[in-house]
Length: 249
Image (cartoon, helix red, strand yellow):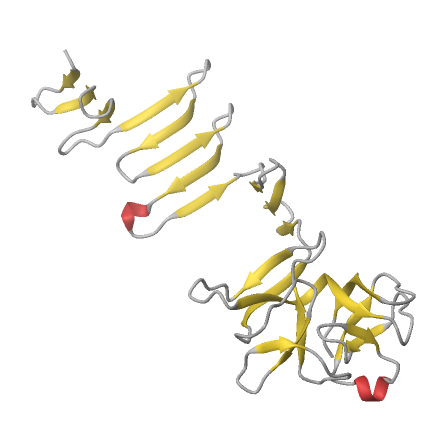
């Protein structure tokens, strides 16, 4: 025997356990929707699968709904976490099992573990760009690495260098491989050149003549419109990669 069926008085099979169809358990039949309910020791529903509306419901031991996934008869889908007196919190975990995104229903906050807000831009075909590079806008709208001091075409810094990864990436597309995430707001590691002027914490940074690098903005008037952000770490000399606070101005 490969199947078990339980029928109602209309001879409709309301429960079917079929081992020939991938060990399928079916509840409900024509005119009768299926519903699976799991109850606790106090005879209260804790898990409900409702075939009528295509919903999945979890309740706490007191019977309050704490998780509800509803298909609304196929017209739209909604997910509810939490209930009256019980704030909902949604955690999205990374590969190390730690939450990387947290939606806190009690405070109405969204917490992102990563650092900056970035947006994808098209990069010049000839460019080989590394994270941390300072980018400027070309006439065709694509970006290339900066190579001129105090360049007002500056667009931002390629996100993802060091241990600072983008928290939000806008305009993400897979149709082109020649795109890079450019940090527009927040903390990001940036290539800097301190050969001509040491960089201190809080210094304004602008583009330099060194390809893809920023430098200290020694001339505030000339730097107006070409400021990338503020240094969050010093660099006494040479070239390096330091964290900065992006603040285009």
